[in-house]
Length: 595
Image 1: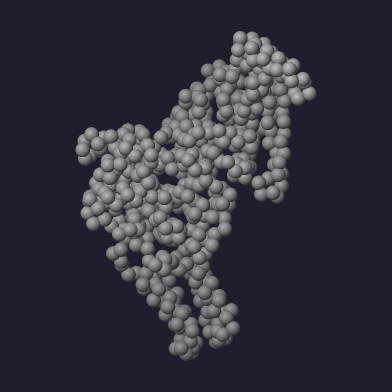
Image 2: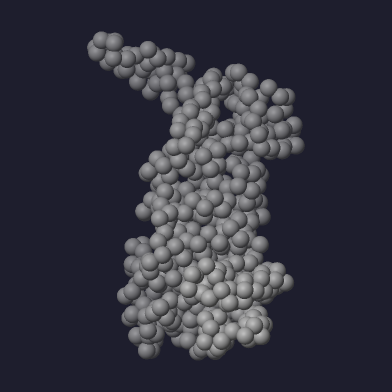
């Protein structure tokens, strides 16, 4: 017997099971989905909505199949066989009669046809003892249907001690996430233009910084919008705004230039003067830095690069046979050095490698090679490279930014907004910064600070057709490395885009939490349906979502159970309005927004 406070017993019954099969998104196979058709009393219409969870009795006692409503259609007995073969006047009379009896409240011959999709779970329940288990057990024919109550949503769908990011649609229940776990396993926000991606991203960032004390967030911003969307956080928290233009000369110049170059949401347009003044205050706080990007780009020599260079010299027909044994010895010593230091091909050379260079150089001299031999020139150039990397520069460059990101001191910045509007430079910064942070964290391992990299407009950084000349190949490889291996180094990612089809598929496979809104292209919806094993019909309901409404799908990270949930996200602008109103009323200093 189910607990009546958690599950409402209804007169609805399972009528049939339909199996739909289609070609997979990549065209290489087929996938099948089950759709359950439930016949429900017409009076239940006020309690049903898309996303409503239902439990169906199964062939196993005290075990229920968990399904989610994907659509429901009002039906009437008089319309069952009404089609084009019926004379028009007769059809008109039938339709008018059906309309009249329904409006009069005579619903004996009316019902709801409810379509539901399995969410991947069964429920073992006896009174208050409820357990969710991954799996499938066939439901009983004509089995009774139980609806999840708001109390059940609060208990089983949301984390009671989690971080609130919005409300479950139509349930008046707060949606609370295990945000720390969601970040650990990476996040993706996917929706069409105007769905509220930047709003949700900003809410997640501010909530994460408030709830995870050891977290730092790095936003790579090509749209020049996050300095405004997170203006209150930049102002009240230790933070850094990195720009590629020259630094403002003074506070007035900062106010004028920054408000002119940033995107201001329409609903905040009345606060333009307040935003301008806050930018001036941030400049006075010394939080703005000019990020130096060398014209040739920032690059680092890895052990993989070095091995490739040496092998190329060995295979070159113009390399003398007397030098090749020395080059083979160098390959051997590189391998031994990497084993001893527990390094891999992606690690960057540093000054500790000089001992290998000196040893190989000594062996080359003992072998009687001439001073003009190519191998000596090569070793000298490696020394010059390692010596140049030791030079201390005063510019705020990628090295300085990486050091500041990994600084565990409490006074160091926690939010970094890195503004690079030029796409090629943005990709270069993304690849260089991620690789630099990776290299430093591997050399000096620590679980603090945890770092979350945020890439809006992700299709620019991780395109499926990455090319070397525009640095998209470098940025794609760096982001893929971040999402593949970053978790064990407490380096995580959040990507946001409007087209999944344009992204590196190796990256998508690493994301465990998806936030989805309107995705008009079928391929994108089909790809996600196959990833999570849910019905296409459930993903099609995202087409009906308004701006700020989302479908959350997760795999062992954000929610207690991996059940798809429709929700309305908090409005980031509400925090900013509260902050700017305080700034306006005080004339200078602003209040911290309450959460």
